[in-house]
Length: 300
Image (tube, rainbow, N blue to C red; front, top):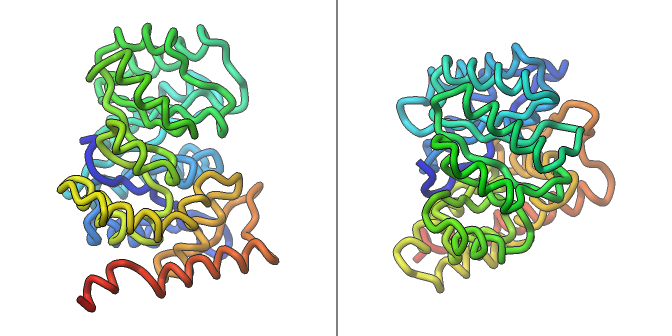
């Protein structure tokens, strides 16, 4: 757990926008076949908050049955209220997931006390290991150190997906807590910085389009080949920046489609990319596909 690259897997839809379980499993299986270390389901990129409660549980059930013996499977816990988050955590544990990635309650911006109470309630509802998701730009709240001080007393809160754009946060967390929390880099375009500063793995959006290169980046880093890791990272960076944009879900799913790995269909209120933005993303993906490091390695 908490090591290597974990793609934030997409949820696939039919033309009528119903969940396509078979296509979703096909996307996940292809990622595992390409060597990723685990899967994160139903996060932001998995369009958690666009899904009905029964759809979330159906996806988790099918994914655990198909792939749970091959890689760790983490599910996002992203709900409007704490009681719904508690119930989902219990149901996900019963369905056999490996761990939970717990987000603040959606829409409402909590105080520090409310944020602590939400995380505490979810953690106490399950025996599963929990990774907190800190993403201040997306969710308008940061898990501050006063809150983390209190959460550190809860034994099954063990990791943090750190998506703050300021990479100094990795060092500040480690300086304050040592090895109490495992850190995972959560923002694609500061992923290598996070690994260099102490993160043990990477939860990635754009891995869904280019998994072999993502795996190769992690492998290069872990064997100490920083020259190779930097080369892959620099090649990847134009696409990695998409992970920090408001339309990251549409951009990542379009990238998947260009690479023949999934469909760009998204549920409203999101709409597929159009116009110049769509053309720009396609051009970036096609350029990366034509210059991908794995092609150079095969040629050598």
